[in-house]
Structure formats: structure tokens, C-alpha cells
Length: 473
Image (tube, rainbow, N blue to C red; front, side):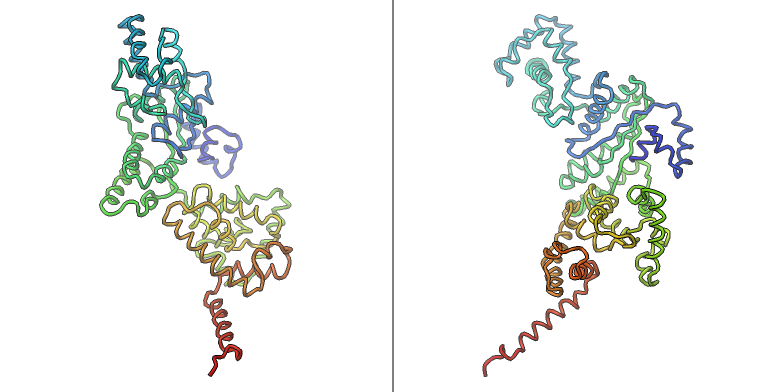
């Protein structure tokens, strides 16, 4: 999605990528001469779909076009339009007298009194504070006017007054409004990059009503109730994972089947673009493992050739059944076995722990110790993943917690006993110290639990059979 955003933004570096030349040429046939409004989103923390998408659009417009008016996506804007019509029909004096009549009973007290044309128009013209503002709250003049109008003339709008945030029009109506608004700014289409949408819905997996209510709105991104969107809205939604897996045990029985049917209905509205796991080596080669110079690349090639002269059975293990030698070179100093493990594990973690991010963390952690010709062991993933962000759902969190307990309470003490040194002392020794090297090598290897536990049982038996421990006759 990041590359797509850059290409549509006509970034020269992205459009010059040789591997994307054919795709860009085809895209130029329909994008040439078009002006797209590219709106990125971060849905996590949004109250609902309207607040996330419509409010996010308003925030983006404030930053990109500060001179432009804010689209009328707030319910209070409808209230103000109704009030303006009522004012014209009643006349100023009786209209403002009516607003002042109940000021003593209002939550705003004396602040709500003394309404006049100047104050009324100033309140309507006051823009709402962006939701991206950490101190977000509806603007005071807007709240004061809305409260006075609801108290006097428009009591059916009571839900606006009770809300501590700006209330929005329906998503369907709001999408039409932003389509009209973007057209007035000279755009040919709006492209929404909804990178967090599915994870946001999944974060409310325990609230079935929320998931059904907000999930159904996804179809509004594709199908409009009214054909009043003058320019198209194109939505890219990063799914990350299947929602049916993310809800875990929060939904059971018939409810789970109903939810699965609803998921199929939502997904059927969108065209799927599947990114295969096999793309990770090619992406990592460019994003994480790009040599700093041609000479550095030659050194890496030579080191890889030297490293690859290992026993065939070891090479087969490192390649797994999915990859070949060329892929191994792409991900070096990582191995295909590590990449394959990482793909399976990182999909269960929070978004911040993507495969590329974990690979970067491994390199940073070993930047002072990793030598040319070394291969990052698969076992090094444990420290980065198990002691990083929590697993995405409660079910996997329990699995990770069990793994950490097994390691810290069982396996690590056994290793420390075998090598006669504590891990905390290993960290203080020079990196090339023989004890430290032996401990790290054994810690990185697959641990034979039977062997380790057998050693402990044998020591226990020897202690039990010592002469000085023999029972008196």
C-alpha cells in the first residue's frame, strides 16, 4: 500500500522501479492526467466507521487544503442549517428571544444567553477541532449554539447534546458529501488507504453488536444507496488476517456461523489482491538487506558462496521444502528456514511486529557482533518475538506466555547448570569468550529435553546413592 500510494502520488523514485515498469505503463493508460486525492487512514482508536473515515477525511483536508471549507459531515451542521431556515422564517428578534428564554435552565448557564446575529453566525462559522488533536472536543461555540437550539427549537436532536464528541451523518451520506467536496476541489477520484480497518474491527471481537454494526458498513465503501457521488471513491483495505480466525473463542455456535456468513457477504463486495508469503524474500532484499555499495555486494556474494559450502543435509534443512539457493542468497545473512518461521509467527502478532520489522530488529541487535559469513540462527527469533509485543489475540497470548514460562523456568536453568554459568553473567563476558560462545551456541540450537532432563535425573540418582546419604540400618 505504501508503494501504491507513492506511485499514484507520482513519486519519481517509485515510478522508476524497474520491476514495476510494466504495471506502471498499464496504469498510466487510465491515470495519466488525472488528479487523485490520496487519503491515508489510521483507524485504531476510532469510535465508529463514520468517525474514522469521515472524520479522517476532514482532518486530512484541514492539513492538505487549509484554505478549503470543511465538508458538512457533522450532524450539527444539519442542525445549523435547520436553525438558519427557522431564523429566516421567524425573524431575528423572536428567534433570538426564543434562544435566550431557557438559558437559566441550560447546562451552559449564562454562557448560553445573549444570543444575537453576530454570535449566532460566528458559532456556525467556527470549525470543529480535528479529531487528530490530542485535546479533541467539539468547539465551544458550536456546542453552546447546538445546546441552545436543542433546548428550545430542536429537541429531537438530543443525541447530539449528550455526545462528548462531534456526531456524524450516516456513512453512506457522508461518503456522498466527501465525493462532492473533493470534486469541488478539482479532484477526479478519492482513493482511501484503509490500512488499519480490519484490525480495528477485530479489536472489538468481544462486542458482537459492534462487529456486526460496523462490519455491515463496509459495503457502503463499494455500493451507494443513492447515486450522488460525482467522483468515484476507491478503497484499499489491508485485511492482514481472516477475521474469522481473529475472533477466536469470543463467538461460538450459531453466532459464529452467522458471523462467518456475514464475513463472506462483506468480502464479496471487494476484489481480493493476495500477497503471497513468497514475496517476502524479494521485499526484504530491497527494504532491509540492500548493500551500501557494489563492493559491499561483492563481499556478501563471496561470503555467501563460502558459507554455502556446507553439508547437503544442513543446506536442505536451511532451504526447507519451499525455497532454493537463489532465495537463500536474497535473504542472506538470514536463512530460508528463519524466513519461513518468521512468516508463520509474525502473522500472529501485532501489526508493529511485521516480518520486515523483526528482521530489522535482529540485525540491529547483532550489529556489533554479526560477522561476514555468519548466518542468523532461527533460535534468535525467540528473544525478539517472545519478549516483544503481545500476541494479537488472547488465545495466542496464552501460547506465548506458556513458551516464555517453559524457557525461563525450565530450559534456561538446565542450560545454566550444564555450562556452570548464569545467563546474566554471559551477557557481561566478552563476546568471544569461550564460555559465552558455548552457552550461546547451545542456547540457539534445538534443545533435547530428554537429554537435559536425563542429565538431571542421573545427578539426582548419584546423590541419592552416595554412601554418606545411605539410610541407617
